[in-house]
Image (cartoon, rainbow, N blue to C red):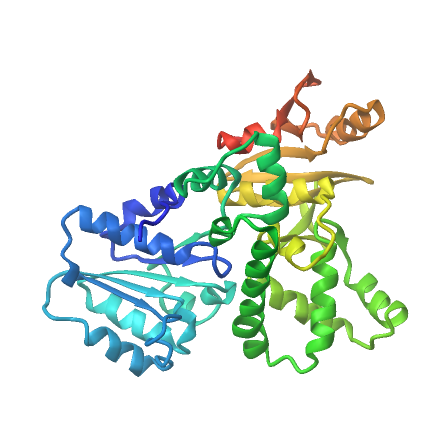
Length: 407
C-alpha cells in the first residue's frame, strides 16, 4: 500500500539512516509513526538495500503481540538474521516489551545495525533507555498532521480540497490523525478518534498506572480535555471535584491522573514563564490536546470555540517545527506564547480577529511591556493585516499552510 510520506520528519531523520545512534521516534498513538517507518524502509529499498537486510517488527501487529519479554524480542530478531551483512532494524511500539532496553542496547553495542524504534509514551525515554544509552540515541518527536500536511494528504488520497478557510475549520474540528482523513463522514471520524483515545487509555494508562478508580480518572480526564487551553490549577481542580461535583479525590491523585495523560501524550503541558524574573512559574499551567479531534470526538457539540482551538493548533504546529513553548507572564498581563529555538525567542498573541478596536488594544497591550528586541507576532484569521508598533501580524491559515517560521 502506498504510504503518504511525512517529509517534515523524513528530512530530520535521513542524516542518521546509516548512523549507529539509535533513532527513537515518539508520539501519540496513531500519529503516523508506523507509516514513517514504512517510508524509511521504502527509501532504503530505493537506495538498493536488500530486503534481507531490513528487519521490521511491529509489536502491535497480530503474530507479534505475544512478544512480551526481552528474551522473546531477541529471539524474534535473531530468527530474521540470515547473514552478517549490515542490517536496518525497526521495532515499532517497542514499549510493549518490558525491559526492551537491554536488547536494543546489546544489538547497538555489537555493531552492524542501524536501529529505529518507536514508542507512544514520554516515559519511553525516562527510564533505563536514557540511562543505558546516554549519548547514543537521538529522539524525534512526531505529531499528528499539521495543516499543510492535512491538505497534502487529502490530495494524496484524491480527496477534494475546498476553500482554505473551510478546510481549516474542518481541521480545527476533526484534527490530523492521518487515518481519520480516509473517512468522509464526521461520525465515522469521531468514532475512529474515540477508539484511538480508548486504546491509549487501556494500553498506556490504565494498565501501566494500575488506576483503581477508573470512573474518577475519566471525570478528571474529561474535565481537562474540555478545558484545553485554559489555565489549570490543581487547587481549583481539587475544589471543583470535592465541593462542586461531590467526588472525593485528593490533590496528589489528580496530579497523578494528569501526569498520566501527559505521559501518554494525550495532553501537552505548557508552563508559565515570568518575563521579569526570567524564571518558570509553578501552577496554573495550560494543557493542549495532542490533536484537535480529541475534543470533538468526546463531545456532541461541534461548534468551534476559536480562542482555545486556534491556540491549540498553533501550539502543535510550532512544537512540530522544533520550538519550545511557554505561556508568558508580564506582571498581571499574559502573552499567549513565548517560543524558543536555540537561544532566540519570539512573543506570540493569538486571536480570531482584531476587527473590534477593544480586542485589538487588548491583544497589543502585552507587547508594549516587552523591552527586548526579539520579534513579536499577532496571529489572527483576519484577511487584512496591519503593521503596528513593530508587531508582525500574520494570517494563521496562510502561515500554517505555507509552513511559516518565526525565527
